[in-house]
Image 1 (cartoon, helix red, strand yellow):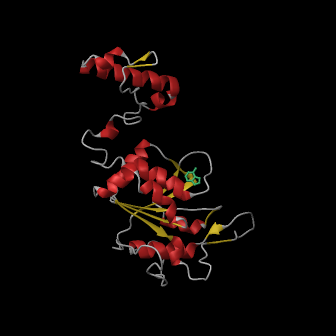
Image 2 (cartoon, rainbow, N blue to C red; image 1 turned 45 degrees about the vertical axis):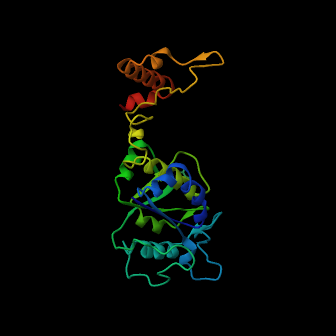
Image 3 (cartoon, rainbow, N blue to C red; image 1 turned 135 degrees about the horizontal axis):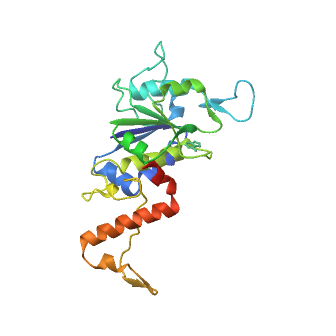
Length: 249
Ligand code: ADE
């Protein structure tokens, strides 16, 4: 899968995308990730990407031109607008786009106004060959930019300062769904939400710790019993902690 991001703070992705499962997914060839710097598609001395809101108000709004120009350079498409923009087709400092093949990627904006992110949406995004996340900052993005959106996604009813952070949460949840990323055991199948329930409790050695014992059934070697116990625990935990999930099933 190809995942690309376009933002004014591309270095924010460095730590998350170079650690743990996100790094392994790239090293094993499951994920081709690139973070582009929106400022590479600006033309003024200050590399301006935002401006005052029309109609007044606090904060700055991200401008259309660099985003449309970057979108065109990264994707080779000029979806929804004409004539074709001519400007910095190639970035001046950051990575050169490798996939400007004229096929529009599924384009994602993270915004509190979007559809609430959940496991089903993570599965849907994981089916795509290529995702492009366009990350807003500050007070918002010029409304005309949303013409590029296939998805507008919210993580919840709160406001984050950076679209990069929201994108990284979604990227992590999506990449672990790609077949093979979590290894041969098919890791993602057993975890919370995969069947609409919270995950059962898990334990590892030692069997006794400060007087607390691991449930005996898990030491029994009886796999049918263990599966039954886990299913019952999942149900009970969901009933106690997230009864809304049971109503949706
Ligand atoms: N950007 C700012 N706040 C956000 C939220 N709650 N979800 C997704 N993206 C955001």
